[in-house]
Structure formats: C-alpha cells, structure tokens
Length: 224
Image (cartoon, rainbow, N blue to C red; front, side):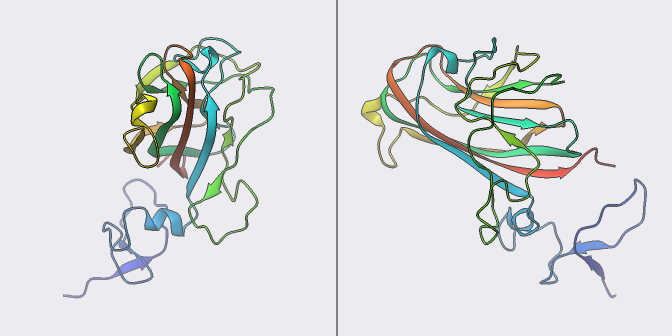
C-alpha cells in the first residue's frame, strides 16, 4: 500500500477529499518532529511581543473598566484582518516590589467598535527570527503595551482567566519563583474586532515592577 500526501499548506472546502498534509521532510503534519510550534514558525504565522520594567499602577488593574485603563500587554485584532490570533503562551514575572491583589489576569473585549486613539506601543516579532528586523514582520495585529486605551470602545472587559502568579519581591529574581510561564495551548482564540490584554492585580502594590510577554499564532478566519 502506498500512502501519499501533499507538501505545504492546504485550505480545503468543508467535506472535500484531500491527501494527508506533509512537510518538506515528508513528515505528516500531526507530529512534533521539529517541535510543536515548528510548522507555525516556519510559515511565519507565529509571533511574539514583550514588555519590560512596567511599574504597576491602579490603571493596570483587572478588569478593564475605563478608557484610562493601561494593559501590561495589549493585543488588538482589527476587524479587517481576516485572521484570528490564537494565544499559545504567556509569561509574566515580578522584577521587584510588592504585588497587590494576586495574579495577572487575561481580559477580553469582543466587538470593538472604536480603536484606541493612542499610538501603538511595543513591537511584534516573528518566531522565524531570520526575517527582517522591522516590526511587525508579517503580523496583522496591533499591540498596545503599557499605554492608556484612550477612546477604545467598548471598555468593559471580561476576565477570561489567570495567567501567572504575582510572587512577592523576596521570591523574585533571575529564574526564581517570581517568573511564571503559562502554556495556553490555543485555548484562547481572538477573532477580528477583539481586544485582549494582560492586566495586573487589584491595586498598585509597593513599587511593583513586572515583565511580561506572550506568543500567538495567526490563522485564517473564519475557518471553513
């Protein structure tokens, strides 16, 4: 019996008969031969954004409830993107200070009608790091890292989930318990006209300084 496949990406109609999809190494694309995110990175569908040394204030608290809200990390999927952002991993860390009110929280606002009037802050980098250094390297998303969401509408967010511990400063440091990684594994899908953000705690704390980053894939939307 001969088993054949098709090399490269395939976008098929619902109910169509297709060959198995294969990579350039003749691997069936259901495996982790090169690692679980290899195919997405290779096809320039995987992206990262980080922020460093953010001093938490009340405007960073969860949930988003006013146009003065300031995400630690903010990601907007424009209505015209024809892509969905699929959150794969979130990393957070307390650099110094004392946290207030517990953990980092993923907030989501669907059906965005008015985009923030403030300029984007932060950069988007492809996981295929050999590409040009210019941001956003093929991403169709917009990032609003540590900037007030002026004019965003609507502004009331859903608290979707906890995405990292806010460990006290005494336990923080290089590689210590203050660093937390969450493998979301695609459990959060951000369709067009949706805003998601990492917010922090329920108070300013005492000189609470954090780093954060996340990784997402961009896939065709709607899927057939």
